[in-house]
Image (cartoon, rainbow, N blue to C red; front, side, top):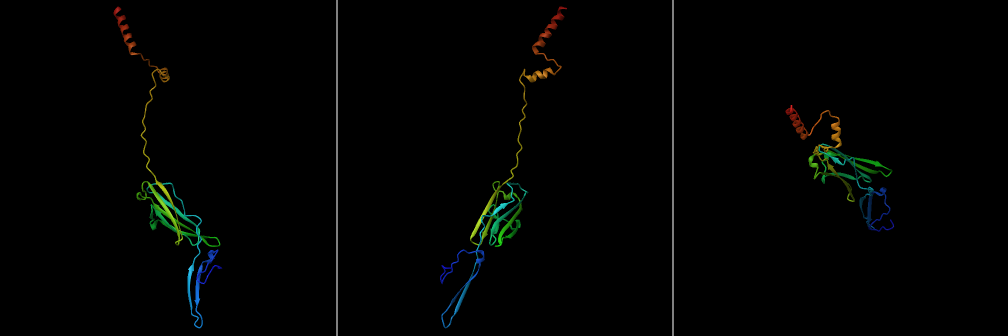
Length: 206
């Protein structure tokens, strides 16, 4: 307090324990010695080391799915105030689960957790995506947020498969295998005509 004056008090190396009510007193001179006092509350804040974290989400959702996610703000004093937003709009209070505060350490630092749970509807998707954002605030000196974008499950279109038969070229190995395993004999058309002519010639000679 060596830099303090009669008009102001300078505190250095403050800690959480420095939080409290501070009073200023002014006394008049003799003979009245009138005294006037004023007081004010000073709070020392320990801020989170990082912004809020979103956990429990999936990369894709489809209509009818249930979203269950948590927003967690790191240790601070006092606890951070958490809020959820869906596509930039504050989430319906009925979707919120909590908040929950966990106090740890000798200094009593507080971890804030706020859940979000709702059933996905068509209105929650904008251009196929849904944005979930969580913000953390402490008084007017701290504001941080985290946002995740998830995709809507797009329907899978059935593929149209084209069936194509494979025809083996004439004289190919497939033809030879089929011919070898068959008991039916095939004659070319020209051979049949010649055979018929030959039979007719023999009959006429008789």
